[in-house]
Length: 335
Image 1 (cartoon, rainbow, N blue to C red):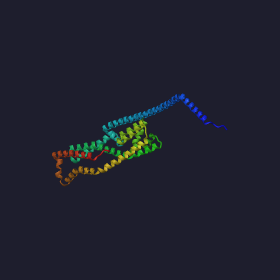
Image 2 (image 1 turned 30 degrees about the horizontal axis):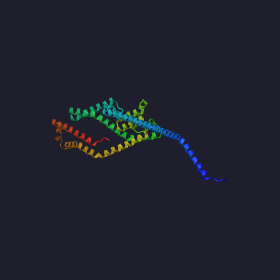
Image 3 (image 1 turned 60 degrees about the vertical axis):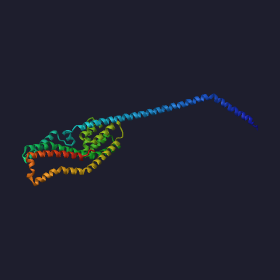
Image 4 (image 1 turned 90 degrees about the vertical axis):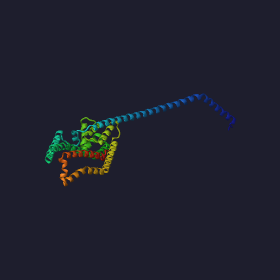
């Protein structure tokens, strides 16, 4: 075997290192240029990616802003329409529809005239005074039928508020099961309880006449002028314009309506004592007048036979009306 001289190995190693250094010195510039080019390409690619992300984010923000502005404009329009409807006093014809009565205006005026005639005859027979009979005919002929219609409207609205959250829950379950909104409205119109059934039937009939779902729901406020109906129409209008989860929105609305009902019941229970006190105070003058008439009829009859007594009764009636109006404002709360 041949022995390798360490000096030769060292010389070979130094020659290899020198050759590598010479090669690196010649190739360093090219390697550095390629490295800078690669780094620049990566930076440009990253900048383009970031620019695309920024553009997508800006587009999303612009879309959200546009949708929010559309929703705000829709709410403003609905609020303006609501204020215009609230400013206009409902006519007798509208109240008859709101009460669920099928009476025509001619029949209503005939009933009012009949009530006025009978009250005039009854008051004239009892008192023998034409002015008293005319006053009774005016009050009963014009006031009593309208009071009855108002009472029926209030009772129908209370029934509607009791059934409306249940109908919303049925709509939520129907939409979650895959039914479209139109079919959910038809389901309420067919299977719900009155007066919710009749109101949603009008909505379905409005759609058949060419109205859209939001417009048909908005028209419900004409026959059922309640804030809860306005909330429902606003939810449907916003969903129709901006999209979103309708079932979740209706579920939230149902929960809000139930909470409003609980709050209304709580306030009514808390104000019951004040209402009882107001009723006692309002009825006390009439009770005292009746007791005085039963014990001393000649003493109390001066108020009805003497002109000064008529003046006292008129002034007392005005002050009683003012007191009853103030007490009513103090014990009634809007929720």
